[in-house]
Image (cartoon, rainbow, N blue to C red; front, side):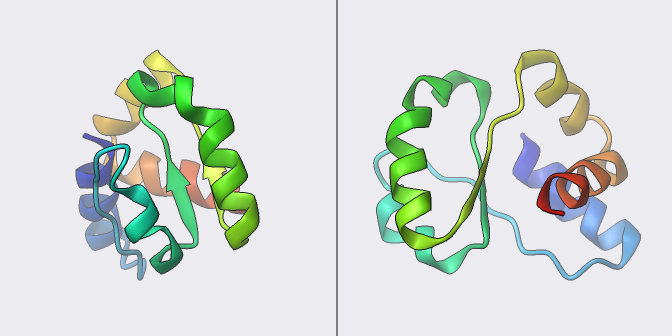
Length: 88
């Protein structure tokens, strides 16, 4: 899971990044606590709905595709690098 890779990568690189995973539908209760939301490929079909919510709250929405997502879950430091590159 990408949230775990981001946590691990943050610990490895000394980045101050908090990461957690949640189910679609529960997101509205916690979205305002984050600067960025990363959608897993299996919920990409909800991208437009999520985009409306994140835009309203001023939150960045990222949605890596299948292989990219899997690669990021296997490379914690790479996940942090990817996250930083997509936030700039």
